Image (cartoon, rainbow, N blue to C red; front, side, top):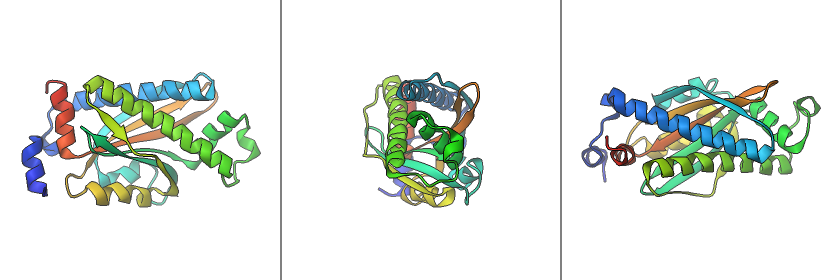
Length: 215
């Protein structure tokens, strides 16, 4: 199926999305991020406050700017989406945020190893954090829309933001160039870190999400 055929099937042009449809996408982002933060709180056995300061439908080329620039080193956890929704889901954090979450989970102080590379155990813990957070997000999206969504085994990479984001840009750029970015601030009374959910459905899947909600 080529790009023009996808546009016909999807019945949606992301460049002409109306305010109501955009508000629904924002609310999906808010609910998903909220449930993901609850899952994170349960995992680390600590209270985690959350707010969503920014939800935006952005072209791929602008995503890295939001995450600190194309050369900023980040941790990216990627999932391929299948079922009634196809596309890709990513959860990204910069290194200080990633280190802080791992330290909380493992009972360490940020001052103990702020400059050290992640150990194998810490990398495994970080992957599990991303898996649980993204899984909670996708579960809430599936429940809200009554659409079956399955995800692949997560793939984690530590690299420049531009390099990590090039994966979905290459894979899905042929059927659309926009992603739903949900910036999330979470933390406790002493520390706040930023995480970024990036949902990249195909155009047909955007249409399925909105249609399931009567739009």
